[in-house]
Image (cartoon, rainbow, N blue to C red; front, side, top):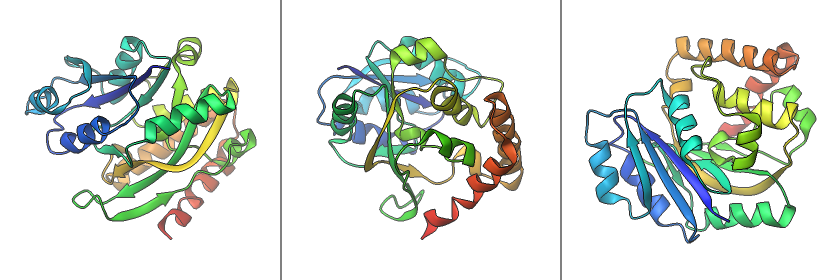
Length: 246
């Protein structure tokens, strides 16, 4: 099974080396690695070319943001399964992709998700939040539950059938897409109870009060788009995050 892993970058030279090293460390042999760069003005592209041992293709050109870049990556991918490794993120251990593929194969699923640790921006050994996803149940989506998107790997045929990211969303296109795949279209999904990704704090969705407000508005729109009652879902979505700090 070929696994296409996509990294979207823009002026990411300060963090991309850790991302590349974690990808290079993977023991799974059949990886197609695609980097979609938004026309960086720093040394991101040079760094990728110099430090990635498993780079398959890099595209560097202006885009409409991260979701546009990820859509380009999906369109470029040729693997059986597609996943994303963001330029602030790292695989947590060297057999993460192997475990992802095995989980898909054992359960005959079309998608898999796992657990995620939020780590310090400057000290990635410092775990700040622990996102433990739990077993999949479709009705949990109506209560604001979602799997961590960076841990989500899905067959490319499902992306072809159900589409990529809706660019009308600036922050919550990943949430909208997961609701579309899992709640609306019922993609067969399995849970890998293992931390596969470490995510640096400081992403676009949690940078400021203004951004958090904008994301909440987009989350509501995503819920409405996918025929889910939004009020209780938003409430439980926010409350559920409290346990991640303990």
